[in-house]
Length: 444
Image 1 (cartoon, rainbow, N blue to C red):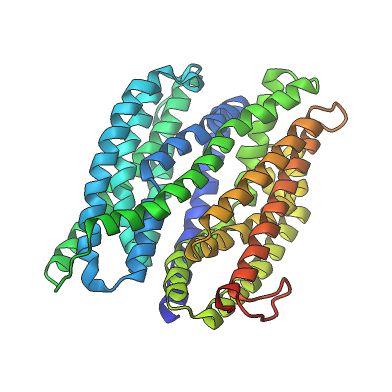
Image 2 (cartoon, rainbow, N blue to C red; image 1 turned 180 degrees about the vertical axis):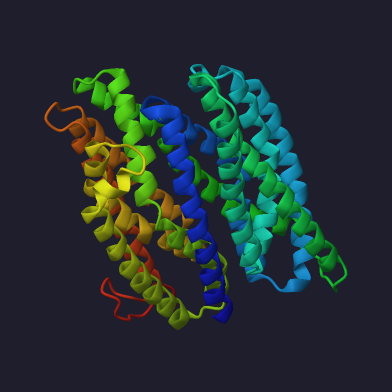
C-alpha cells in the first residue's frame, strides 16, 4: 500500500504541473488560432486520438495487469512475447494506415501533411505502450510521471518558439499546432524506450522462468481486445461528437461557422478548465489498475473495499472543491482564453459532467482490475447512446441549443458513474452507501 500511495502522490504532483502547462498550451492555441481555428483543432483531435488508441492496442493496461499479477521471474518472458506481438501488430497497422488514411474525409479540410504526421504516430505509440505498461505493472510511476510531464512541456516549448518567432497563415497554424503535439509524443517515445532498454538489460541478468507463449498472448489479448474495443468505442464516439453537436446547433438555426465557434469555446475553453483537476483522477487510474489487479488476484476483498472507500472520499473532496471554484469564478477563469460570457456559462452548466467524470476514471480502473471490462463496455454504450440522443434532441431545439447539448453531456456522465459504481460495489461486497456485504464471488 505504501508503493500505491507514493505512486499516486508522485503522479498527481507532476500531473498538476503538466495540467498547468496544458492550460498554457490551450491559451496559446486560443490566441493564435482564434475561435474558428480552435474549433477546427478540437474537431480533428478526437480522430487523432482514435489512431493513437488503435496504435497502443491498450498494451499499457494489459501488460501492467499481467506483470502485476505475475512473479518477477516471469517478466522477461512476458516482455519478449509482448514486443513480438507489438512488432507484428504495428506492421499490419502501418500498412492499413498507409492505404486508408488518404481516403479518410475528415482530413480533407486540413493541410495535406497532417495525414502523414498522424501516420507517424502508429509506431511511436505502439512501442511506447510496451514500456509504459511494464513500468506501470512494476509500480515505477516516476518514469510514467516524467513522461507525462515531458510531453506537455515539450509541446508548450515548441508552440511558444514557433509562434513567437514565425508567422503562419490559418491552415499552416493548424499544421504547426498538431505537429507540436506529435513532436512531443516522439520525445516521450525516445525517453521511455531509453529507460525501458536499461530496465530490460537488468531483467535479462535475473533468474527467469518461461511461460507458455500461447498463455502469455491469451492473457494479453484477454485484456487488450475488450479494453481496446471499449476505448475504441469511446474514441469513435468522441470523434463523431463534434459533428453531432455542430449538426444539432445548425439544425437549431446557427450558421456552420457560429456552431464551430461555439464548439470551440465548449471544448477548447470550458473543457480545458473543467478537466484540469482530472490529473488526480488520471493518476488514480494509472496506479489502481495494477494495484487492484494484484489485490484481486489474491482475493483480498477487505483491501479492495478499503481502497474503493479511500478513492471515493478523495475524489469527493477535490471534486466538490473544483466544481465550486468553477461555478463561482467561471468568468475570471474563461477570460484567460477569450473575453466571452458564453464560455463562462458553459463552464458553469457543465459542473455535473466534470464532477462525475472525476469519479468515473478510478472506477474504470477498478472494473479493469476486477476483470469486468465487458460490463464497463456495456455501461459506456448505454450512457453514450442516451447522452447523444439527448444532445441531438435538445440541441436541435431553437430554445435550447447549446444548453440542450450540455444537458445531454451531463446526463451521460451521471448515468455512467451510477452504473460503474453500483457494479464495483456489488463485486467487492459493498452496498451503494459503502456498507460491507458478502462479495458475490465469495458466496457458496
